[in-house]
Amino acid sequence: MLEYKIIREGGQEIVITPIHGKALLSISQLNKGTAFTAEERQAFGLTGKLPFPVETLEKQVERAHLEYQSLHTSLSQNSYLNRLLNTNQVLFYKLVETHLEEMLPTIYTPVVGNAVQTFSRRFTIPRGLYITYDDRDRIEEILENRTNPEVDLVVVSDGEGVLGIGDQGIGGMEIPVAKLMVYTLAGGIDPNRTLPIMIDAGTNNQELLKDPLYVGCRHPRIHGEKYRELIEKFVTALKKKMPQVFLHWEDFGKINAYENLQTYRDVMCSFNDDIQGTGVVALAALLAALKKSHQQLKDQRIVILGAGSAGVGVANTIAEYMRHLGISDIDIKNCFYLLDSKGLMTDISTRASSYQLFYLRSREEARAWGFKDTETITLLDVVSHAKPTVLIGASTVQGAFNENVIKTMAKHVKHPIIFPLSNPTDKSEAKPEDVVEWTHNQALIATGSPFPPVVYHQQPINISQCNNYFAFPGIGLGVIAAKAKRVTNNMLLAASKALSEFVPSDSPLLLPLTEQANAASREIAMAVVKMAIEEGVARVEKDTNVATLVDAHRWKPHYLPYRRN
Image (cartoon, rainbow, N blue to C red; front, side, top):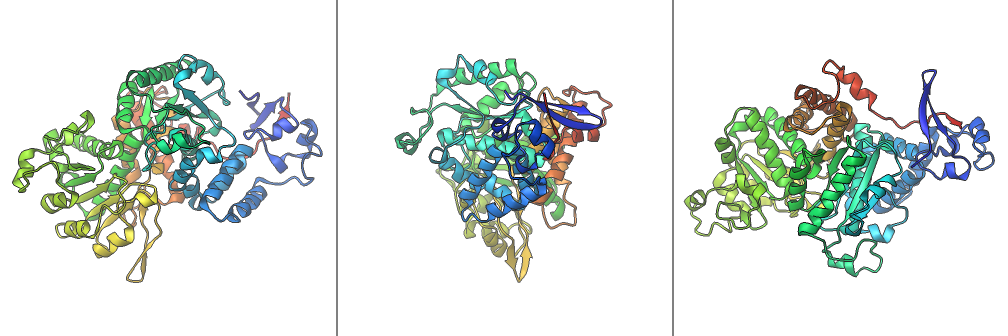
């Protein structure tokens, strides 16, 4: 663990540390580079180790941005930013904060997908902690080896269900690292109080197992009792060492994602972004779309293509909000049509898992449509017969929302709500420009990956990005500020409602712009804190000034003065 502390003296924060010389320059959390003052250089044995001028953080950002722009591929830019994070943490966050719209896609989706796939071939400096099945009886020891002594937030993955690219083994570590970057950039969560963890349970990706440079465990994924044992021992150790930490589950396979969340949701303060975060931001976009089209949620017919953790997570969040509105489960169920890779899921679908059962349509309905074989009802079949008002993609099937599907949908609804949410970009169910053209610009669109504005009749149309970075940073900030014991459904619904109300009603967008992510996260955090207090799961006083509390937990990248001890 790092030997330093921050004290407040005379209204100013000061870093106190015995670390000096080359060691100080090599620690990302402490390095200021050319911004060390002359006095600090003298005190910490840095005189002559740096160029003579003392520079501001802003001057360093200017130089770093020039270096970033000189790189010609998004993956090389991603590598550069990660190296910078390993060199100077404050400079990294100030640079990306200053150029958020330009750089967020580079450190997060869609470029992080490429970084995951090339992880072993680019591996140099490790971040976070790695836990294998062989480590199952010494996880407490591993947790003690963390760099940051005080941790508020852990993001953990086993790399089985990464984005739309599936099992990536140890390369999945890129995702917790990227998620924590976004937690800081959008939510203001102190990066010195976070920890990425990779549970290396093996991989079933044969290309990785055959790769001589693969740095993960070279065996098929453990499963069944062995897997459950590993997760149980991980959670037990984490709870013992960091009892109040916020545990974020990320990119687990769809079965394990649901089982882990349900098993440990009340054991530790837990959250699964693929399930709950996706649901929160999709519900927010849907509420905004309904407001703009003057429709009611209870009147919608919602088709979701993709029955994994993301698709069912979206359905669950929308369904929970409908219950909040007083709609019965029977009426809620009648609103949804869930499709997996083989078609509409009905009550004779032998492939259905427990978490999908609520959304199965009846075989009688399918037969009433004229289908004898209810196991192979396609998306176009469902759109033709169910006449949906909302079409959501979580399938990672590029182009699944084709011209025939979209035009058939548009015949039956004036303003079709269409959300191709899969990412990276090449996994999106539709391109926004096609949807705009096929619906004559009548569709209300939000995509999971970033797309440039669409030009329609010589007018630019901005496309809302329905990305989880509008949800999880604010949720995490609110949970940490409230010291919440758990994340309740109502806290998540409060987050959706706050996000849906952030964009003015006269805006053509459904969700904020990228540069507004930080401000939107603050509103979400306050809504989460208020609901946590209302539901009695917060560990703060009921009369707490919520805005003051949230702002006190927001970290900003800036240099502090140093004193040697």
